[in-house]
Length: 179
Image 1 (cartoon, rainbow, N blue to C red):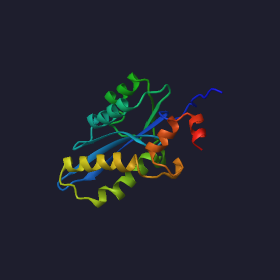
Image 2: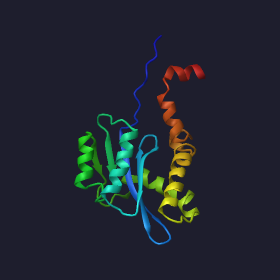
Image 3: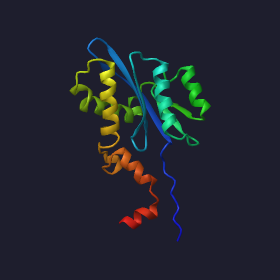
């Protein structure tokens, strides 16, 4: 009997959002892109300025890490950075469909909002970052070493996103042999 890989719904919807992080003398801004199915952070960027360059940097990271599957949807709120002509052009160049939250619909970007709530309560509010370099190092460590690889999600069968994605990549017949 021949085993075939099932089609998995990764890279169907990416969600993007921006949050602010207070430093001693100013705010800094963090953009994160998440795969909506696995809740894994696939792109991110931190900057002193909340502008299109910030969102383009996070998008470039996600595009370098993930294939763009046909029909991929990029969802964000109504931020001007995500609606800028440069950002929209980059999405369209890659054949990515654009989805924006309806005006006043706060739940449309709930996955990104939940990620930022966790990031702030488990990392940001517990630290006093000296500067943007210090913040970047701590945030990268939290995202890579905690959020993506250790933090359990009930929606993923109480698995962290990286483990969930590894299981999705395993052919079903290989999983059956392990049981």
